[in-house]
Image (cartoon, rainbow, N blue to C red; front, side, top):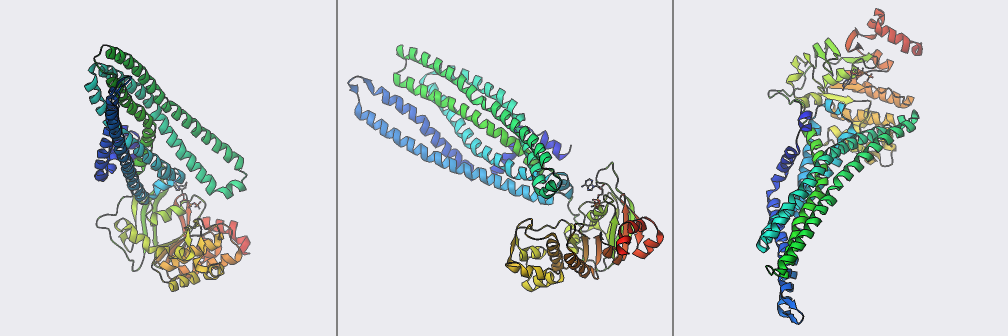
Amino acid sequence: MNAKNSVETMSTKQTWQRLLKYTGKYKRYTVWAVVSAMISVASSLTGPYMIGRTMDQMIGKGAVRFEEVFRLLTLLGLVYAVGSLFGWLLTYLTNRLAYQTVNDLRGEMFDRMNVLPLKYHDNHPQGDSISRFVNDMDAVSDGLLQGFSTLLTGVITIVGAIGLMLYTSPLMTLVVLLSAPAAFYVARFITIRSQQLFRDQARILGSLNGYVEEMVGGQKVVQAFHYEDRSFAEFSTRNEELYQAGVKSQFISSLSNPATRLVNNVTFSIIAMIGSVTVILSRITVGDLSSFLLYANLFAKPFNEITGVITQLQSATASAQRIFQVLDEPAEIPDREDALNIKPEQGTITFRDVQFAYQPDRPLIRDLDLTVPPGTRVAIVGQTGAGKTTLVNLLMRFYDVNDGEISIDGINLNRVTRDSLRRNFGMVLQDTWLFGGTIRENIAYGKPDASDEEIVAAAKSANAHGFIKRLPHGYDTVISGSGDSLSQGQKQLLTIARVMLVDPPMLILDEATSSIDTLTEIRIQQAFLKMVEGRTSFVIAHRLSTIRGADLILYMKDGDVVESGNHDELLARGGYYAGLYNSQFAAANA
Ligand SMILES: Nc1ncnc2c1ncn2[C@@H]1O[C@H](COP(=O)(O)OP(=O)(O)OP(=O)(O)O)[C@@H](O)[C@H]1O
């Protein structure tokens, strides 16, 4: 059974057992919360007793023991004040408990996101992951917050009220107790029905977030293709679905409170009648009856409150299941215990009988054999979907080969720590990734302790220094996460500078296919050339100059390297590469 299934079949009980393990770490808060709840409930239970006693001091017209009434009422005020104080303490402690728990969960989830294999991120919309991180965490936090204090005070109140009712009138207590299961089963009947609806709601919310994230991220494309109307139509469908799911789940679950209230009110009326008769028969005093009725109310209230928070608890359960789903996703297979930290001396890269498939039934790379001597400039070309990025994914061990091996200087990559492997490769991707911070911080991403001189030198090598200097605050200019205030070319120059600073022995470059102004393109080309000098480099190449300057061109087709050699050799062979050259570059070059 895979992790996803195991969480999907996780029962409510298992989910809460697991959630409470996180809460269990904060026993100190829990113990004090229980003590506070007990004191606060004790005060609310003492109240009705004292009110009853006070009433019994007012026997009739002109027969009121004022002194005693005054004493009891003062005491009552004091008892309620202490109760309020501990009620506040209970809220404070449950707040801490809930936020600490969610804080830990959030930390664990963030950690897990970082160790999940790329496969997970490739197959899950970012919006859905963000929704789990934000919305589901909030739902769990609300559930813990409300659930904990309500359940705790509820249970103590119920137990205490039963004891005091029994003390006052066992017969009437029996009536109250017999009616309790009715309220409980009514609530349970409704709860079971609404649980599935809450699960659906969380799922639809995740999918809506995923869609919004796609559409907001791709706004340019959306507008360029006049997709706005269709995008809005699709959004509206999902939004409507969420609306329907929300209304339905809220409607069903909100039935439970009025339904249990109805049962309780009927019970209350019956007890009032029986009680009146008992008073007439002089078995109990009027004070006792009023105390009892107040107890019966106190006894019923938690049922109402508990059924009220059941809505929140259900939503928290569904959300916790979605969080645990991520936590249970298998992490990237850890490095072997005897994994080596490599520092390649030569850097000869060999592919031997490499086989790879993203999906087991769709083999992509079959029996790939290749030797790349140190310092070789490799250009990978081929049509879209040919497997160029896949080759890079395997080199960086974002995915592991299914069979065969890739080695550096004869060391199988499976025996190398991923960290040291990735440190040896500098990567410049088409999708430039910048984060919210200064230009300086963005360049120093791979070497946070770099000096200013090193940063400037790297920027100069990357031909980025000139445009950075012209920015309003130079290297201290703050850019947004997406780097929207910079041009595509400038962003790529920054990412080149970032790699230059780290100075890795090997490089992986994904040449931008997007059009960049000629001057910037020349700058990038120069920067690329400087970067690959003397280093083993793999370039997913789209420009003729890069391809022609390469020592080794790999022409990929359907996952296989079908031709390899340098430009002249491949042209002379008259195969796929020659076809590509003649159809795409020859005319431009003529
Ligand atoms: N994460 C993935 N899961 C499943 N299949 C994938 C995944 N990534 C790529 N593929 C498939 O593998 C094949 C090779 O994809 P790859 O990205 O390596 O091609 P490419 O040559 O880099 O294409 P392009 O030039 O368009 O970037 C394609 O058929 C693609 O659909």
